[in-house]
Image (tube, rainbow, N blue to C red; front, side, top):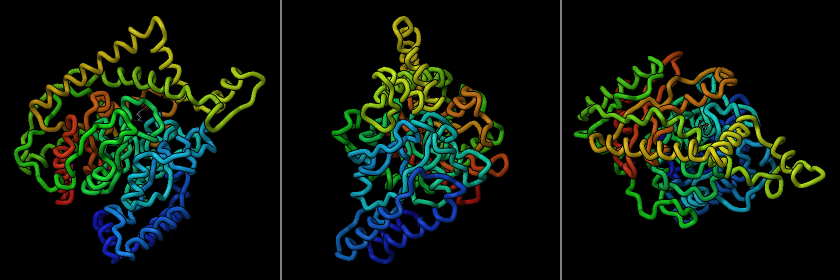
Length: 476
Ligand code: GLN
C-alpha cells in the first residue's frame, strides 16, 4: 500500500484526487464497520465536502498541504466544532463543542480529512475499549478479541484500513498498547510536544496526543504536522521541533540500545521472544546493546493509580448536568448533580473519581497523592540516569497479545497491569512509541516499545525505523 506521504504527494500533484482517497476509505468503512465498531460517528458527508474542496485547491494550483487528501480517524475525546464529542460517555451525549481542538485545526490546514470520531474507553480510562458506554470495538485481526485501549477505535480503524492514520491520546499507554494489539505504529511524544488544547482532560499532567499509522515514516509525517508550540496550551513546549521524517532513514549505527535489567516481570514468553529478536535486529544493523537499571520503574503503576485518578477527579467535576450534555432533573440542585452523575458515568469512571477524591482528601493527601508525586520524581530521575548510558530503551509494549472480550472485565487490577510497561514514561514526561514486530500466540501482533528521553524523538524514530526495516527484511 502506498504511504500517506506518497498519496499526499499524488494529490498535490493532481495525479490522484482527495475524493478518490476518501471514497476508498468510506467504502472500507461500509464493508466492515458493522463488525468492528471503530467509530462513534462516521462523518461521510463532511469528509466528501472537504475532499472536494481540497481537489478544487489542487486544480487551482494552490497547495492543499502535506497531508492533502489523507484521511484521519480521530479519537472521540478531541473537540470538533459542531460535531458530537462524547468521550464514549453518556454524560456528554448530545454535546457539540463550539470549537476545534488545535490538532484538528492543524490537520485541516494541512489538507487532512477527518472520516470519523473513534470509540474509546469512557474518558480514556481502560485498556480494552470495553468501558465505552456505546459498546466495545473489535480487533480487526480477531474479532473475538479486544483492540486494546483506551484509543481502541483509532487503532482498529487504522488496522482495518478505515483511514490512513488515527489520532489517540496516551495518559498511561492508551496509544501504544492498542497500537501493539492491533499491529500498527503508535507514538506517545514527549509531554508538551503536541498541543492538548481541545483534548478533553483525563489527567492533565500525563495526557499527550499522538498518531497511529501503518509505517514509521507516516508517524513522523503526522507528528511533523501536529507537533509544535501552541499558545493555547500553557504546557506545550515553546520551540520548533526538528523534522522527524529526516531521521527515519538515518540508521542505528553506533547507537546504544538499553536493556532494562530490573524491568518488572510479567510479559508472556511470546512477547519476550519478540523483544529479544528486536535487540538482535538492532545489533545486526550496527547498534550496541547496553544493560541499564531503572529501579523505580516497578512503582510506576502504583504511583499512576493515585496521580491519574486524583487529576481525573478534579477534571471530571465539571460534568454536573449544568453546562455539558446529559442532565437528569431532580427537585433541587444537589440531587440533580448526583442523579446526573449517577446516570451519566460508567462504573470505571466512578471508581477513578472515588480513588482520586480519596487520595486528595484531607488527612490522606500526604500519605497517598504526595507520596506518589515523590515516586514520580524518582522514576524520572532513574530514567535520566539510564539515558546517560543508553540512547533509547527497549521493552515490551504490552505484556500479552490481544485478549478475548471479558477476560479481564471483572478484575480492575488485571486490566491495570496491561500498562505496566507504558505508564512510567508518561510519569517521566518522556517519549515512547511502539512498532509492530512480528506475531506471538495465535498469530496475533506483538509490538516492541522504544523509549527515549525528553525531545529525543529523532533518535527514537531512527530506532523504530530500523526495527521496521528488519521486519520488511524477513522478520529476524
Ligand atoms: N489504561 C490506563 C488507564 O486506564 C491508561 C489510559 C490512557 O492512557 N488514557 O488509565
